[in-house]
Image (tube, rainbow, N blue to C red; front, side, top):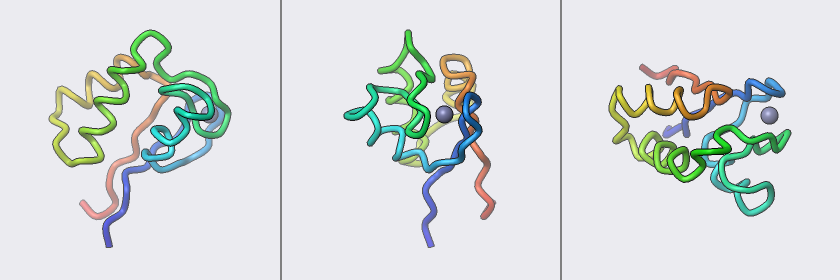
Length: 83
Ligand SMILES: [Zn+2]
């Protein structure tokens, strides 16, 4: 079974699937927590979305993960349990 990547919010601690961050853009703005609506990357929202899309597509490279941590330190990706 394909499982979407998950992450947890460093602000509110809630775990969510990464597509929720993209879906929340319409409601809270791009790059916000889908639960508490706080911004993960207020200055780099478009960069964040691009990186999340790469993670979801399975094309993210190690430097992309490092960049993600750099622009969104409160967005904590959880490693795949399948790996
Ligand atoms: Zn949150």
